[in-house]
Length: 117
Image (cartoon, rainbow, N blue to C red):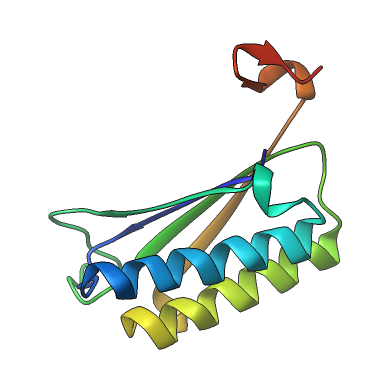
């Protein structure tokens, strides 16, 4: 049920590099939020144009959606580890990565047509 979405203007590399990053991020979400990987969805979406601080250098916006509340320590650790992964894989400087968290009620999330709550 956690979903992590990466929007970026950084070059993504070839398909195997993208899949490697998605796999790494999936594991980070699973570990930090305590959810099985079978319920974790991740996406990396290239955007044609993106600027931060009026600078077109590589940057990322990472959005994390989950059911319920994550512990503050889990949010901090996930943010740090995902930012590090983006720095290694996409060469995006940590100061150019924003991470947001949306914590939703189970009644606002469905899978296979059924609400979780």
